[in-house]
Image 1 (cartoon, one colour):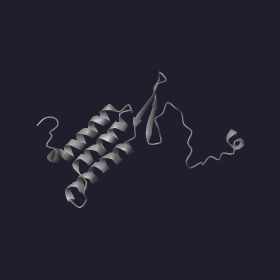
Image 2 (cartoon, one colour):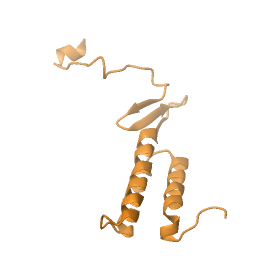
Image 3 (cartoon, one colour):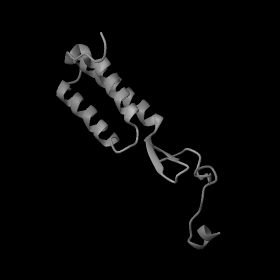
Image 4 (tube, rainbow, N blue to C red):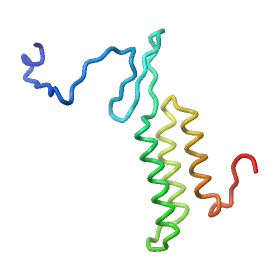
Length: 116
């Protein structure tokens, strides 16, 4: 194999060769190849799950008064994560994540979202 000539070793446990027309994850991103040949890069479900967990933890820290975290810091953390996610092709996931953030912090922020 060419990898042996280059001095590289592939791990059978970590390496997977698959067709590109199937969805696959690489470096916490999900890639999809369309029939036209366009590669779509979306946010991994694990990344969204990790961000929701971060929101819950920040809410807990803010309400517990044990830490000196400010509300402006929490909002900046959320905006920073959402800013890095905007380069993905996941508009609906971003809207849902903003809704989740506002739903958890609406009593603190004084902001309502959606229908009453």
